[in-house]
Length: 84
Image (cartoon, rainbow, N blue to C red):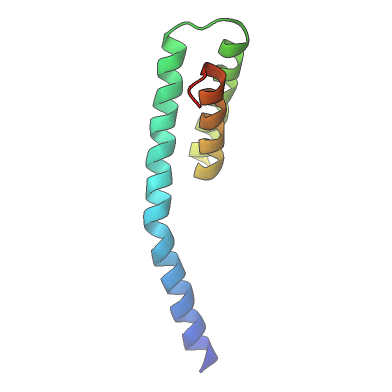
């Protein structure tokens, strides 16, 4: 009797996480677009360096489907340009 209850609990958790992951994936993609737009403004110095690093990190994490880490990189980019 325990096994069916565990299966139902796991299925419920999986279904509940689906929309959240979709939101994070969309936020990650939007964040990458934000970083690219900031880079198009031709920043210099430390801002440029931070944006390039954040973009690289965000794209890598997007590819690995680690959206929470992608969003951390986007937050770092926002901080670099004073939009955080």
